[in-house]
Image 1 (cartoon, rainbow, N blue to C red):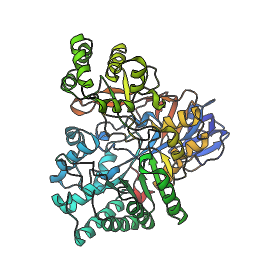
Image 2: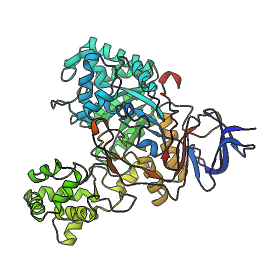
Image 3: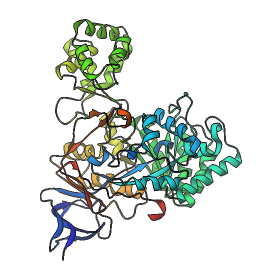
Image 4: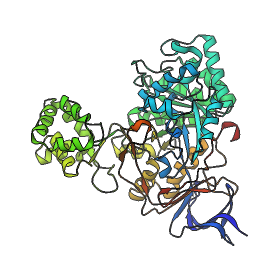
Length: 552
């Protein structure tokens, strides 16, 4: 008997948490049809001897909402084994949207997520008003991997209230309209609703985005309507009122298929552990995601993410070659140094959070806190700005530096990411594109937290990045390798698996810059039965689907 695809002789880690086992996997169409000793031949075969075969990974936190318009291969996540990506996080989505409000939503996405407004307005078809129409537009783009989406509080509230949505409370009638629209969006295919309660997420005019200060009764009303159609609630909370915010998450979970929220060590992991355990003991489905390494920015001479003084601001306006020439000019270099030194103690404290990512192919994300630029400079008898310039000069401007802004304590982070409710993720792919790059989080989980640190067993690492997030989204046909399930599959060499050093490219519309990050060690990624990546390089196939709530 022949099959469309046979993955032969691999070590299968099926996503259930069960121990690995050796087997072949046969695929016909988009389904797994046999696991074991597969006879006959496949029209296409992948030799997986010595390799790991796992489910495709599920990314619960991306902002690829705009990028998918001009990059349907949705890099960088597709280089890292992700076969399903969730859009519409943090309360921001591009639907529902009246034609007159497109510029508002694009401007909001620019200031909140650092995605250029012009790219958004010109890179998407904008041929929708309803959320269902938006999903139709995404489907027409033909993505390489599967896409699903949350409907955002900002867009929903603005659709109902207009300008009043930014700062004013909703009336009882407006709350009913907002909730009804959220429910209708889930009925049309959104897998849930997202809201953002961080005041620092702002519009171009400096005001916090719509919904930030919405009364909790508004969100409870939304949750009831979202829950009626089987949707989930996603919350980005500041936890500024810890008791009230965690009570809200519990209330949302009681009337929906589940509550998903973002957290970091700084959110109060121990207090959250107590609260979430109580919610789960009540039978509520509550899950959180966190960046599985120190989160923050990436800076270097090739970026605009470095010191801020008049001389450095002038450097920022130059092209890369001119920047390199400038830092090698003794007089210009002295001015760059003197202006930073004049900032005094604040810059010294800031440099305790910046780390050189090294000059190997694999970036260094796991240095000790005493390996910061500040500490390296102290050991060398330099000011940190001198260390920054010396390393940049020696590497011909290629050096990159990692800002560890949150989740800074890796030992504490290890404890957080092994809690039953805290899953690794939060890569923010498609957002803050010229400032940071954490899209390779799944590769980092396998290469660092499993292989290098031994914190997760291989089967637990795979379960947390495939089956668990698939279950959060209600995807009953994905997330594990079982007969009858969709053929979303990774084949990788665990010994070789790693992220590559980030790099700046200018492939956004109008030449805007962004970071990309490739991976090494992926022999193949299969989505819906078709090979979309082979030997770390993306293929031409684009078999991804828009996964809608009513099709789960």
